[in-house]
Image 1: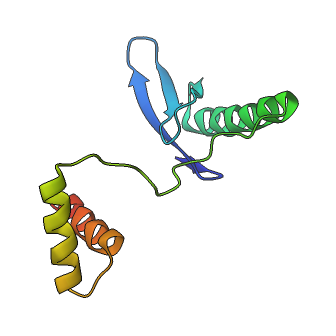
Image 2: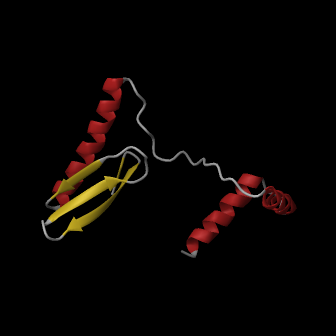
Length: 108
């Protein structure tokens, strides 16, 4: 499920007959639950809105879903090899790595 850029993962507690959900694309914890799909969706929306309101009341910026930036530490020799390969293909390091990661995701 998605709402305002926040994405949730949902599971079913079969014994209790209840759906549990958690927002998965931020580090802050936002959870919700419901006994039906419509109740679950409404609880998700309300939980995100509560989170945004809570942040506003505290004068804090809510954590945004992923920015698209992350730092990876690799061996300096590998860094050099990747840089050279990207230049040979006429691409920036970011573009080359992004393309390789995207193609790798297709194989999962």
